[in-house]
Amino acid sequence: MAELKVDGQSFEVADGTRLVLALEDAGIDVMHRCGGFAGCTTCRVEFTEGEPSAMTVAERDVLEKRDLLGSSRLSCQIACEGTMAVTPLVRVASSGADGPGTRPEDHITPEPEWI
Ligand code: FES
Image (cartoon, rainbow, N blue to C red):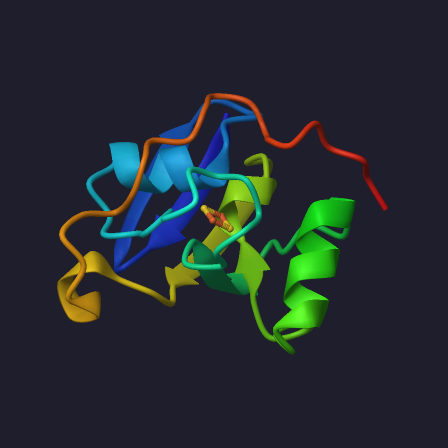
């Protein structure tokens, strides 16, 4: 099991759970406007513990393009492992959006190529 710490809560999720879904299914306000395809960056989080070193090419490319590389990670491109402490950076409540976006699939999309 992996341990997630967010918004003052701590909970366990199965190893390999897609981070964006672990957050959403725990009732955390997190956005995912592109449905988890590394296209929108609204699922981005800041890590304070347990940031994985592995990154998908899709994540690197979009973070680089939007000048976000090094300051945040995409929760749709990360599988939970170990202990992770994160803060979602874009919330439905403060965005004015009508919802978080299409629910991402259970596995990382697009097909991950790891760097
Ligand atoms: S980049 Fe759009 S949901 Fe992750």
